Length: 254
Image (cartoon, rainbow, N blue to C red; front, side, top):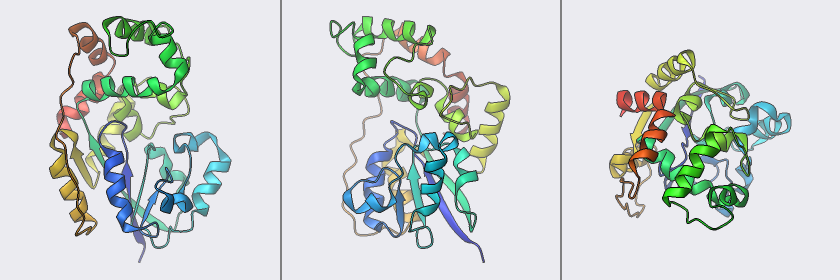
């Protein structure tokens, strides 16, 4: 009988990092966290898994992770394109958490200001505060000019229709422009997901997933905070306009 594995498709800014910390209680033999944190997970580390399509060395490392035989769950910022590079001895299901695409993208843009080059462009070399109105005007200009300063391709992909790209199995090492065919592929794949959690109902999502993997007697605290403050109408409308396919997926699958 073919052994089944479950992949947690970690969409950035959906509470996945906290959930992975809870999953780590399963131990590295049961849970493969490609990020390699905490220290107990180093044996399973895979670096930037988003580049798997274009990186043959990373493909080889993926197959050499020693815990595939015993693991029931693996996790990372991967697209479903990872399926073709996973060990062939097993079958795979996928779970994920989705979030309102406007709020997710708003949060993601602010998060990637951890890149000094990107932050420098959007803040006019530190003259503008992150999140200020002029910061968001600079983001619109950055996006419309196809500027890639300070960011890698998989980060640039995070600004628009990221959920669609991921579930369509797109290669995140390239800049992807979503069309109807890509959207339909994502829609089909999401409909086959083993579980779709909702960031806006995060506690229930966490409870469901801990139960799914029989993780018991673990203490955790959920801080419910699903709103985005201080988002102006122009910025909201722009983010909405570049995430039209993600919005359709979210409305269907939430």
